[in-house]
Image 1 (cartoon, rainbow, N blue to C red):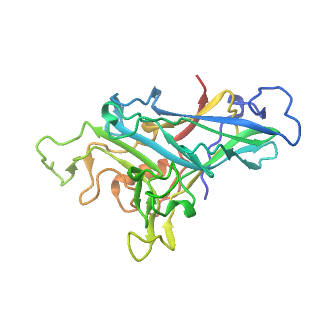
Image 2 (image 1 turned 90 degrees about the horizontal axis):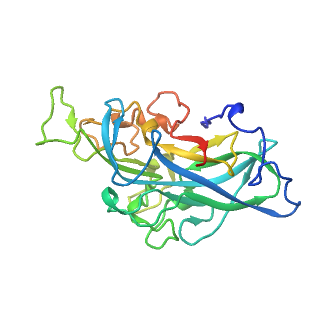
Image 3 (image 1 turned 90 degrees about the vertical axis):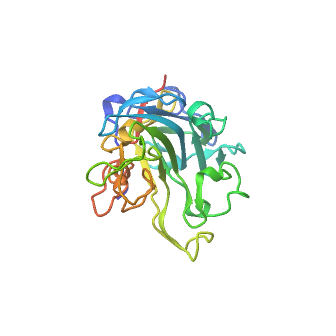
Length: 302
């Protein structure tokens, strides 16, 4: 089932004229420029490298993020008939390629010193003239772009830090953070729970991909981990899409690591540290029912 998130009708107009409030639509046959702004948040606070945030997760922990990058694709606007009209992305040679865009909220400073100095928070492109009332996009990459050689790929698919292997493909979401539960002396508390040794990274990508080796593109990924996000009320002229780490981690214990698993959540379907993270993305965990995603939300542009 494709997860959707709906915005109450009282909070957004039933239909908007793209980028023009209530102005008349552009002449038929012309294209209209679009700028869809995204913002990174930790609760109501803006994400910023070097900033620590308290009260996060079920353990009310302190986190200090060191990376926040997200791939989205197949961005579309929803017209008055409810149809998704693809946004033709500007091919800028750095952040947007074909129908893929990299959203980058880290700037390579402070706690994010292992990142890159550039940032990209707004996806730009164009759609045929008309009246539009919503937004749709996919979290993740299409299969034909997800498995290949990042050293020869076009930007923004040329970042090896966002790549697992040809078999698994790219990290659709890369969020790294130190947590207040990092070990002092490496002790293991009663009950066998392992104190967190490397913070709580969240790396979301395709899993259970079948191929002869890690250096071979797969024939299939049984868990592609793609999420279609749809807001049936969205005006790019006055609103933005926010990604909230606090909401994503709301039900997760950040101070310990499940025994015999990788640090944090690496999208493994049997990692107990992913039990509440994957559903927050709108993805299944084990045989549990899929829940509506809560990572993305619509808010007024500042």
